[in-house]
Amino acid sequence: MTLPRVPHRGERVWVDGHYASVYIVVRIDKLEGIATLKLESNPAIVLKYTPFSAVHLVKEDVNQAAARIVKEATER
Image 1 (cartoon, one colour):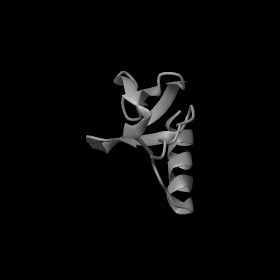
Image 2 (image 1 turned 45 degrees about the vertical axis):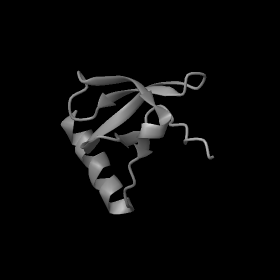
Image 3 (image 1 turned 90 degrees about the horizontal axis):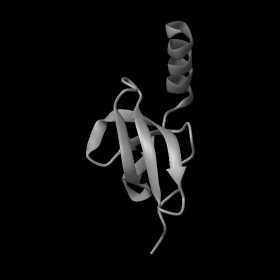
Image 4 (image 1 turned 180 degrees about the vertical axis):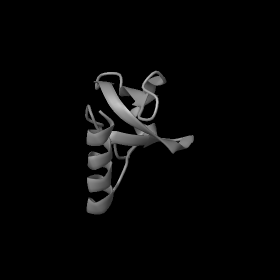
């Protein structure tokens, strides 16, 4: 049995059961194997006690990453 991947703070992830939403990892607890996540589009929405096994890294290509970075920079 392989252990689930440990997420890192600041990573963009999706969660089992929340496929259309992207979250940002804000806190991890390696001892408990859980993460606290904030919804990227609405930081007021927080998922606490999310097991590592339900958290998956968002994979984006270079063009997607560049577009996201420009969008984030111009929104501020």
